[in-house]
Length: 369
Image (tube, rainbow, N blue to C red; front, side, top):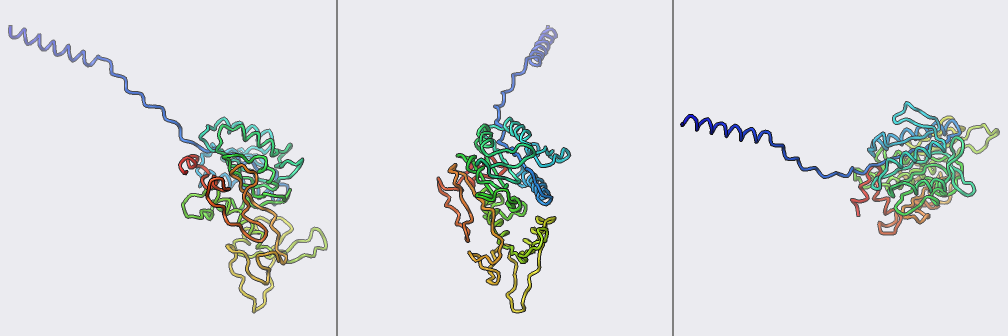
């Protein structure tokens, strides 16, 4: 009797254990869907170079824009779309030829990748012109004009848009494309139709050297980048003096005196393969030292003060402008013969949005009041 009772108890325990092991598991709670982090998408459009020297410079600037965007700005290489004078499918990311049709296709591709929280960056680089009176960027075949570009930008699904126009003839692009919540930098904010432009060189150097980080905050905002590039472009022009003004033949070289060691290095690279050559100043024993004028305007009266008395100084043909309030006026850092004070960081003042815009960090706008 006792043995029978023990077997019955063991059987009951086994049955209970079997029931527990075969019971279906309770489904785990579903994790809430997470919104993907905002990203940045960039299009770099470099147009026709024309001369051998300028085509070389444009190719160099295109490569360096990609390096800055994917390096210091930390964009994913797959989100940087590049169009250049000459296609390069082996580049990383690949370069397509800068035609109007290719540009429209790339902008459509970029729009499909963007969400309302993302940042879109457009870089224009090359020769611009003013016609009809629209601004145009010279491409292979039909050009892209400022009105058409404005319509394309208005169709993007995000309002977080940055346009960096380093090409000549940029004023009309600013006038047509300026809008609320949009930061536009133009290296040539007025005139200089069709002339060579060098704003790109100094905009890039601001990121490459960290020189644009004015407050040593370890990040560079768009106002810092603009102010650095505009100032250094102006100083680059103002450190050049024409030594030889007599040319018997149009092919004769122009001889220039260029002040500042680093400035001379940049000058020789940019003007290689042109009719411009670097001269050596004739100095008298009692002349004051030339000094290192890479960071300051030339104060030497022997070569003209930094005012209206130019003394063969090269005239600045680029006047950078920034618009981030949609007014289409923008802020000029340089007015004739002097640099302007920055506008105050107040609502409605130019530069307020640019100070809160960081390439590659779309969330910066939401994080800073």
